[in-house]
Length: 102
Image (cartoon, rainbow, N blue to C red):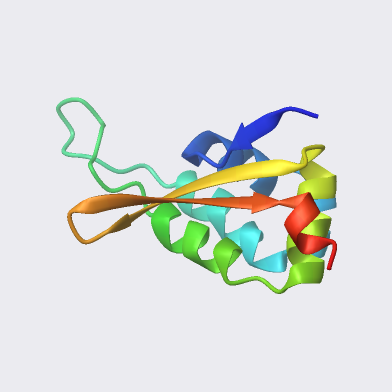
């Protein structure tokens, strides 16, 4: 299986799929927040889209081993790369199925 990166689009896609929201109910709020129109009116864009994807990544990193294992299975991968800001740096953490086997 290929390595996957947990980016904003991946989290948004997960939130739209029943198999993920059934296992991780807190993902349901992502779709509702993303669908809100935001912006200044000129361009309709905004720096804030209502979803703190970095916080969601921290939640995923804090999951217990069984939930992480289930997430990897649902994503059909054995390695998930998670990048989270930590102060002025980006912390790169990897969730690996082989490390969760113990």
